[in-house]
Amino acid sequence: MKGSLSFFLISLVAILLGTCRGGELRKHFYEETCPEAEDIVQKIIWENVALNSTLPAKFLRMHFHDCFVRGCDASVLIDSTASNSAEKDSIPNQTVGGFDVIEEVKTELEKKCPGIVSCADIVALATRDSVSFQPLWEVLTGRRDGRISLVSEANSQIPPPSFNFSQLKQSFASKGLTVHDLVVLSGGHTIGVGHCNFFSRRLYNFTGKGDADPSLDSTYAAFLRTKCRSLADNTTIVEMDPGSGMDFDNNYYKILRQNKGMFQSDAALLTDNGASNIVDELLDPAKFFTEFAQSMERLGAVGVLTGTSGEIRKKCNVVN
Image 1: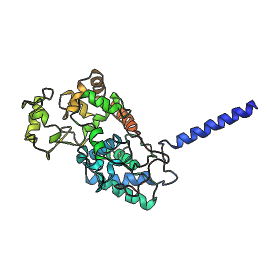
Image 2: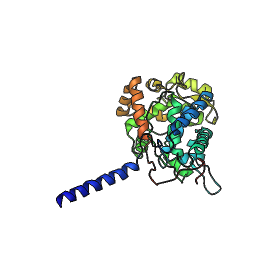
Image 3: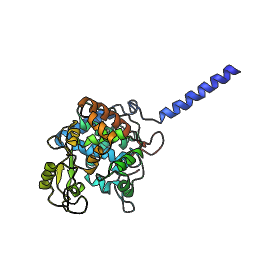
Image 4: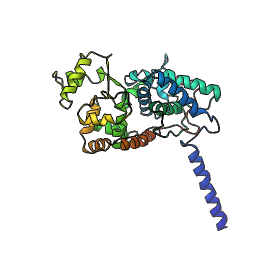
C-alpha cells in the first residue's frame, strides 16, 4: 500500500511538472511543428539588414518596448482601430520601425506553417538575428500573441529617456529586471539614433533657466547643439554612440564614462554607485557580450503568454 502511494505521488508530480514545463519557453519549440521556422526568420532578417543598416537598432527598440507593456506578446505590432488607440501610436513608439519586415517574415511562415509561429517569437528572433550574423544570445521560443494593445499603457510603462536613476530602477523592477539588467540593456544604445526632442532640454533648458545639463560633457553638448538647433526640433536625428553608431560593441560605456551619454537616462547610470560600478565592469568587451546575452534572455521572458494563453495571430498587425 505504501509503495503504491509513493508510486502515485511520484507519478502525479511528474505529470504536474510536465504540464508546467509544457507552458514554458524552450529551445527549438517549433522543431516538430515548423522545423524551418528559425531559418526562415534569419534569412529574411539578414536580407533586409543587408539593405537597411538601421534595422538592428529598430528591432532592439521594438523588442524592448514590446516586453515592457503586457510582456513580450507582440502587442506593439497591433494597429489602432476606430475604437482603440494601440501601443504603436504611443509617443515612445513613434521611433520604432521595421514593422513591414516582421510582416514579411510572418507572411512567409504562414505559407509554410499556417497558424503555428507567433508574432511574439518572430520579434524576439528578429531582434537577435538583426544585431549580428553570429548569434549573440539564445532565444527560447514558445511565446503566444496578446490580444490587447493600449496606447495609454505604452505611454505610461515604457521608461522615457528623461527618467532619473530611481525611476529607471523602479520601472525595471516592475518587470522583474534588476539594476544589473538596466545597465546592461542600456548598452543597446551603442547602435541607432536619438531624436533631438528627446534630449534637447539637456542642451537648452535643463532647469528651466535656459541652461545646459552640467553633467553633459561641454564639448559634446556644443556638438549636439550644431545638430539640434532648438527645443522645437523634433525631426533631426543624431547617432547615440558617436563614431560607432553602426557597430554593436561596448563603446557606449566608454562614452558614458566621458559624460557623453545622449539621454538623461544614460547619465543617470553614473549617479548610483552600484550602477556606476557595473558600467566599469562592462568596459571589458567580453564581459559586455556575455552579460548582454543573459539580460536579453531575461528581457525576452518578461510576462510571456504560453500554453493556451493568448493566440497565434494570422497577421501580426491585427488580432484574429
